[in-house]
Image (tube, rainbow, N blue to C red; front, side, top):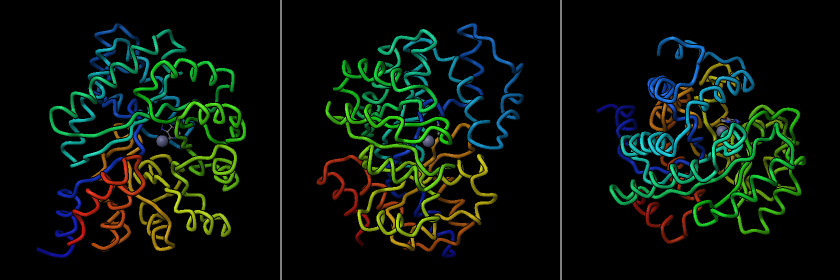
Length: 335
Ligand code: HPA
Ligand code: ZN
């Protein structure tokens, strides 16, 4: 076996944690089409291949338009269950043993779907996956940053009724023009209520947004964060604190943050000692789950076995698992 083949085998068979995954972004075109029919929701596509050809994005904004449109086919608790169940089967296939999953309740509640329907469908599928094949998971609720803080406070109130199921809050949607400081009070309240915090920052937006997420929102992780290399002081701070950056390489190519995977800064970030790992973001829209992200990065950036191992170990280190559980998974890589 060549060294490259060995690395690919290692990627496939290693247990991994996924820390940046939007459950609505796992809605595969065939499933979207089926749900639109079942729920009688009009979509501007007459077949699956038309849906697939619409997945051609020029930036984050152009993706979000299609992404929110796709989410409209999710109506019943069973739909959220089936969506999540399809994802956990992908976890099994990819050897993802722990998943920390985002959901966007405002996308659903604002079109008349009950918060309980959304969270219960997702939660029940994750519970079943834990029972059937041991997948562990956490749920993180994201605020839509293009909406105002009042809307965020309203959804946070609803989340308080489901504190047993939701471990943290995050922030996603249109980054530019919606800086983290817009939600300083909201995040303060969420922290006071015992939620962990994370935030998308530095995907398209400037290093300043990463500073704000750290200093004002007190986040435990930065989602994406690839723009951090523009600012040396920020890199030093991220290195010293070992704040994780949940990088999503195939997403960054599809949304044209980088032109080609060969130009992606993942390896640079890793070699600067930053706490980075690889995630799939919205795999149904961006063309690949976690193994595909890792395998394509390995090829494009010529990642060594050692570098791939660090990325996978970092996925556990950066998770919200308890220390003993983290160490249990990490110890499997010590030989
Ligand atoms: N960025 C911001 N918002 C999102 C994303 C993303 O990559 N995916 C789903 N919502
Ligand atoms: Zn994301």
